[in-house]
Image (cartoon, rainbow, N blue to C red; front, side, top):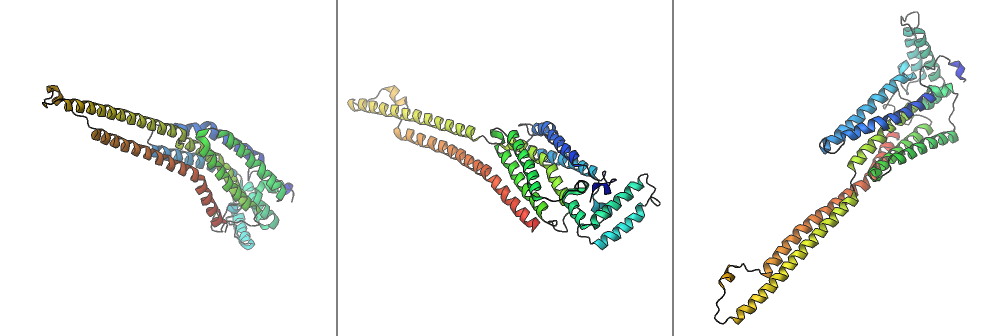
Length: 360
């Protein structure tokens, strides 16, 4: 089919170049406007930690939903929505639906100023969905694919796929440079892997792999477009939250070493007191042994006796307190490192289970 057969359908969906420009606009919008606003919400001391995270997630979700919803609405209804049918509708059901809606939208009965465009759009939708080849092209590539006379080519598909994901992978790498963004980069790449697997599954499966009850009127092309549109929001959300949740293990290690250093100083001080106390006792004992009458100086009775046993007990209590603090710091470091290192692994497992359930 040539695109000249549908000269009036250019307004049904936005062209490919417009989608590319929209993606670029979304990227700059999230990087230069939404990311600083999210950083302002997550600034330490502005809100409580849990509230900051909740406010940031709510803000990002609201912006992404609003922006994507406006863009999706701007694309206009797809052919299934236009005729009021689903992906599972039979040709007979499509024919009945078209007959009903064509009577409603016919310019002789429709008082709307754009009645002719509405009627022609319904006619285009009917022609596409009733043609098996065009129906398949529309599901995979949208109306712009039909206009461009596009067909699925495996080499071309994987080439375009590689260009898209390599470009975004480089952007993610550049935007997540630095120690604070290490976890954010891992989250972004995990999301890209899930998105890549989803897109390959959607585009290489002859029929829509989603269950018939899920997104009944949504095509594979629209699902891929939705994932591409939401990824900039997801990436910048990961950047903001990753920086906020970052734990500097090197700084924690330095604090631990400083605590150990202070502990050693305490031990040395107590040991020195013990040594001085032992020497004082030995000196007093020697003087007492030489005093035959047993009389002592009056001031000696008022001087508190320092015993090695008391100093050793003091040393033991200090060591126990210091060791408990050090142990707590070490356990905190281990738990934080374990959680950070296993988060991406858990997300990967969850994504695999979710995709396996959805596509099976």
